[in-house]
Image (cartoon, rainbow, N blue to C red; front, top):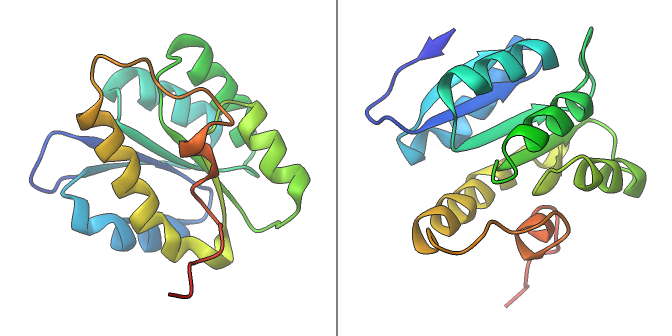
Length: 152
């Protein structure tokens, strides 16, 4: 399902729970993106090839194809893709698996509100450095999510 807004920049949201996809659309609505929904990793890969979204927000746990497998396939074909993995699990292993699969960042579902600023930074990175190669997994962009806020 494609939910049109006012631009031609696409954001692919892959999660097997409709209410989570709706929440993410609401959080990211300030960025004037066109949203594409996928309910599993296989559909996410297919829609990525069709729409070439500038941002992918993808749940790790989906069936039949999980988000990590989909992220690896997308990154293999498009090393410059900007993927943010999300999960209800908070462990460092999930974060590491996400980055290893090619995600730029990992956000827990309890901290989804951080997606708004994270996606803004990734969009800015895209427009500020068009001639610069994309950041590799594990670089500054991949460390943006879930970092403690500066109390100042």
